[in-house]
Image 1: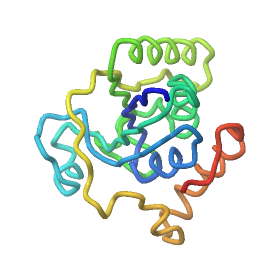
Image 2: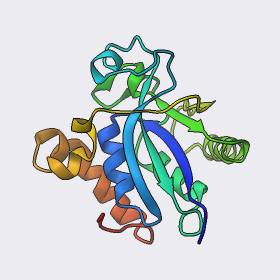
Image 3: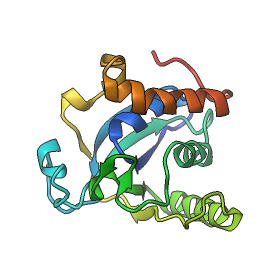
Length: 181
């Protein structure tokens, strides 16, 4: 039996990221939460002010025997715009920034390498601004933010923002795509 690993990523609204990664084979759990800031035990209301330093993130537990960290990051970079500081689409504020909070030095090296490769390939017209920092603390979001897309699939935000990201992953990463349990 393999050892599970964790990845902590922020690419805008955590509802979007959580929904995407719940569909990835090799992902064991995904939790929405907050990280990267200075306020202990933040709440959604506090993080929404943009003054806590925290970003909306997901913490992913995955089986590296079934899914590599690099593959996780390939999906991460495909489903958000890593070139827009403090925003993803209509979501604006530092809590929506692109961020990778690495758990150990190997994750740091892999993330840095991918960012360098993507910048060199000029996939986007602007350089990647994804923040790359060590994870100090992950704070789970309130229960109403967990598994949001699965619980509210027909809500307008889910239909217009989240569903297209899930479809994109299904189309472009079909080898990794599965329906969540």
